[in-house]
Length: 104
Image (cartoon, rainbow, N blue to C red; front, side, top):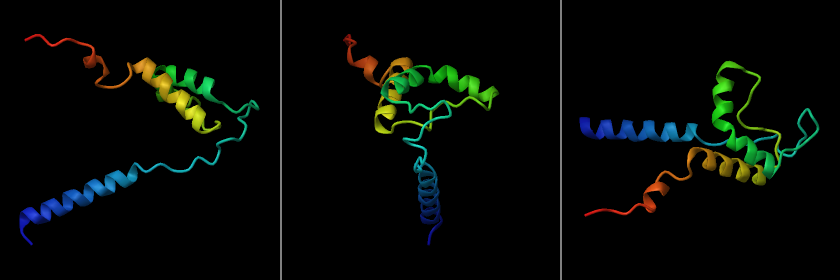
């Protein structure tokens, strides 16, 4: 095996290993009530997504603050959370360029 082929094989192996580290795990607390007795749904997910950038900064200094509620209703909470984050952070990455006119 040549040096170039060995490097390519190692690079592909490292990338595959890195990608498997990103695989999501099951949330076993979905649908279970939080300590306050509620199960966050779409609207709370929307709110928590909207304040996620602020919550993230606070969570760096306070270990009792989480960015995401693990006691949630599942898909609807996730959907609300993603919409909230998208609204706060400006939506899609290329969305701003779609409405601009190009000058020649």
